[in-house]
Length: 137
Image 1 (cartoon, rainbow, N blue to C red):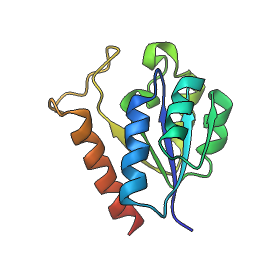
Image 2 (spheres, rainbow, N blue to C red):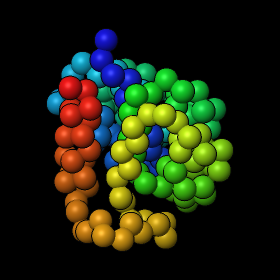
Image 3 (cartoon, one colour):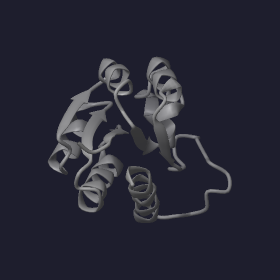
Image 4 (cartoon, rainbow, N blue to C red):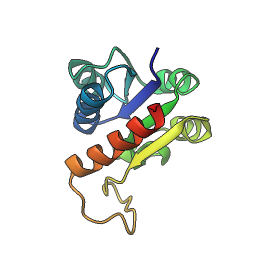
């Protein structure tokens, strides 16, 4: 059985969709769970190849307990980010998880990661997938 990878995204789930597709290609043995902050995000990540998915706060609280790796936008660990879709409880649960956290520095919603540079989404996803591959051995 491969590593348990949890991908969290919100709004339209496009970052999560691209991340699921890339992980599926490069780490085919990975077990990918997609958690969307809304049903559109979840649906897009499931269409991209996640084995299972769920939506909302309680889904995050349950899924972080079983994940080896959690990946998504940096806003997933900041309460009220993603236009309010990340609740304080969600951000805390993700932050407290023992899983390796890969935070993609998407500079939106007044959350700017200084020093992250102006990388494209494709470049960020490429680096995240490299880290996942390294972690999975």
